[in-house]
Image 1: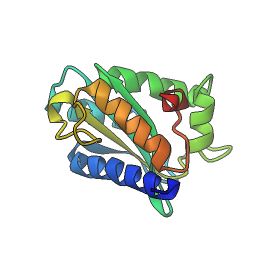
Image 2: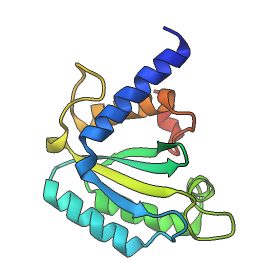
Image 3: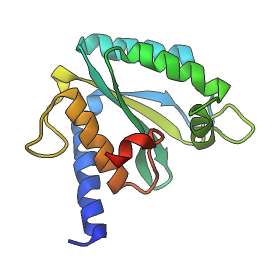
Image 4: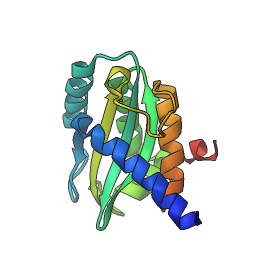
Length: 165
């Protein structure tokens, strides 16, 4: 199989998993709008509350002109607490959030460049593993999604340190 073929196969596996779990996706921010921290946290609290899981995997995606692309994949026991931290760091633009601002926000503005969505899936809501036959624990699912995204999409994840796994 060629590299292109392998990359395409990995992308399809990633996209199939995301499509099966899209009921757990919320609008994060629309193109040209600022990120409304209060709205995002309210939607996230509702989404996580409906699942009531002990651990979650989350995927922040951006809708570019030709495709939906994963930008950040992580896991947390409390996605609301974790995203409270992310949403506090993004406006300051310090440390790793310099990359976030550069990727998501229009230069010199506080508005997003592309539509952003956040998918948050609790462990009990995982329907299947991204890679057939692999475990469905949150840690395993996060690991699989990071690997598939790293090899199936042209842009690096913002949490690129996980891509060398």
